[in-house]
Amino acid sequence: MTAIYVNDLVKEYKNGVKALDGLTLTVEEGEIFSLLGQNGAGKSTLINVLTTYLHPTSGNVTMFGKDVYREGAEIRSKISCVAQRTSIDTHLSLTENMIFQSKLYKVSKIEAGKRMEMLIACFGLEKYLKYPVSSYSGGVKRRLDIALNLMSNPQVLFLDEPTIGMDIQSRAAMWDMVKKIRNDFGTTIFLTTHYLEEADQLSDKICIMKNGKEVIQGSPNVLREYLRQDLLKISFSVKKDAEHCYECLKEAIALKESDLRHDKIITSLKNGRKDLEYTTSWLLEHGIPFLGIEIVQPALEDVFISLTGENEKEVS
Ligand SMILES: Nc1ncnc2c1ncn2[C@@H]1O[C@H](COP(=O)(O)OP(=O)(O)O)[C@@H](O)[C@H]1O
Ligand SMILES: [Mg+2]
Image (cartoon, rainbow, N blue to C red; front, side, top):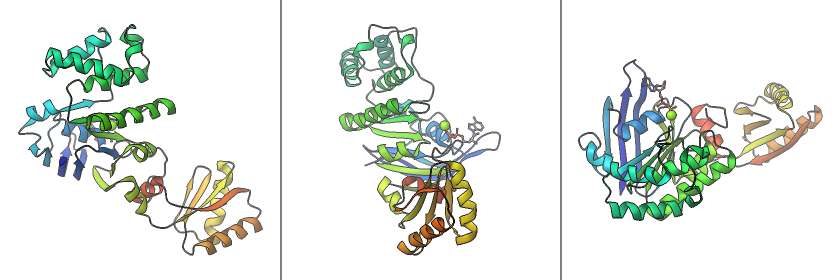
């Protein structure tokens, strides 16, 4: 079943900024759907429209077949949203926070007790029960925030940039948590991110967006296949060497579709191994201090760059 259907959605703010400009996307029930785009692409605006917080300028949005505006109250009872600012009250204890949340959603006392116990165990929060919430680390606060938002057993959970600013370990723990929510509760998860790796590791489906429009949608594998052609990667030990080589190589071999990325040059292959051999001998002849040269398959990053023209690993 389709969980979310967005068709030709436009949101123009009062200042004339068109944050969403004819966006169309479909989210299936039970999937982890990632909306990937750089800062300012319109991700938070879309979440605010989907969670009925903002009214769109035009277009259709339905959730489980119901119109998000005409049936806003019903939709709100079925969804939960973890925004960038937490909804935790640091004056309350962990359990008081959870009970407060259940009251907001009118969950019965018995049901709330059961869910609280289950969520505390599920997300490993037992050991924090005896400490004040204000003393929790950022990562634990975020875990609690998500647990709070699951008290109402939502059908769709929205996560706006859930791992922004996190270190690698906390990010991996968050990915596990998101997958667990989908697997254990069957919750549809709609998240936004500007980390390519996050979208790649986590999602059943990705929608890449730019300037308020979708650029491409599909599973990570389908997106990777988009480029279809292998690439030639030349690595250097330092960025400066890569930059120097890039300039020389551009003139010498007339590389049309090539990118300088940090300490690497990535270029599309026109003639397969011949290009590899030719480029290798050119590099050696000119005494260029490169570290390695190899033919690689396109990564999601290559697809992203090719479609959006954004040449950054983290898209922001
Ligand atoms: N309340 C607002 N009023 C006017 N413009 C806004 C408002 N919120 C966001 N914008 C603008 O809309 C565009 C999309 O913003 P946003 O949805 O926050 O993008 P993202 O979450 O992808 O970074 C940006 O150009 C931003 O400056
Ligand atoms: Mg945002």
